Image 1: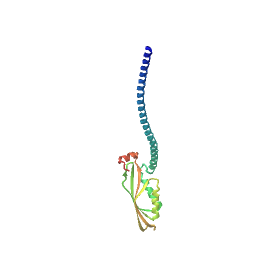
Image 2: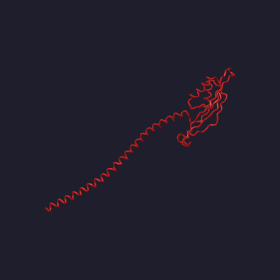
Image 3: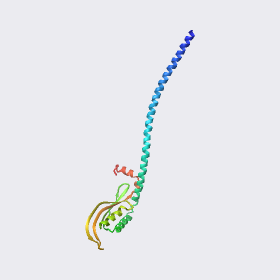
Image 4: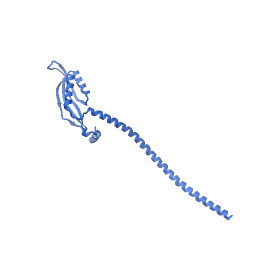
Length: 197
C-alpha cells in the first residue's frame, strides 16, 4: 500500500509538472500567437499600401507615356533648328496667297524660354477683311507653331498702285518657336524656373 501511495504521489507530481509545463508553454504560445497576429496585421496593412502604390504607379506610368507622346508631337510643331529664313519665306507666301500687302515685317530679338526659343516678328498688313481673315487662317493652320498676339485691326479706305481697294490694316506680333536641344527635359526646365510655367 505504501508503494501504491508512492506511485500515486509520484504520478500526481509528474502530472503537476506536466500540467505546469503545459500552462507555461501555452502562456508563451499565446503570447507568441498574439505577437504573430499583430505582426500579420501590420504586414497586411503594409502590403495593402504597397498594392495601392503599384496601382497608382501603373496609372502614373500610363499618364507619363501619354504626356511623352504629346510632347513628341509638340516637338514637330517646334523645329529644333532656328531656320528663320524658311519661316519668313513661308509667312511671305501666306501673305501673297491671301492677297494682303505687308507694310511692316520686322523680326525682333529672339527670347530664350528654357527648352524653347521664341522668335517674335512685328507685322503690319493691309487688305480686305476677307484677305486678312484668310491670311490669319493660313498662319493658324501652318505646320509649325505660330501665334498671333496684340492684334489690332483698323478700318481704312485706301487704294493700292494696282487699283485694289484696301479696307483694313492689321498690326500684330507674330511668334514662332524653336526647340532648344541642350535643354531637352521640360520638367527640369520647369523646376529651374521654380515650378512656374
